[in-house]
Length: 168
Image (cartoon, rainbow, N blue to C red):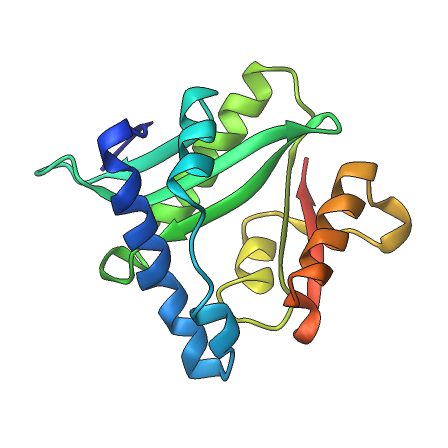
């Protein structure tokens, strides 16, 4: 597996990865999350053009197994989305993408990684905690994280507990 920038022609495949990864939420009774559409091709291309869309590609085919999109925010690199296709799950692919993002953040002089996630989904907050992320108390949220949480509430994601997390 290698980490590399996403290519324009791969953006529909990233949407497919997102849909496949999201299906697991259905088993938890989170149908609205499972049925949520992935980022549009335009949004994914914006990340790609800014150098903020990376894929974990299979060694043998160079096809994406997973992807991560992010952007600098409030002095950290905010992980907007990281998704691993279920066929590649439990192989360290997501961890490798996050480590790559952490390396890029360090190179840019950013202070850490941030993300928002579901607090009670086994492959969300507890997974990130095992990778060194910590839950941020409400008082420690940056303006950018507050704006993201407000947007998530507008989208109805607060039907399930959500948290902001950070890894320095």
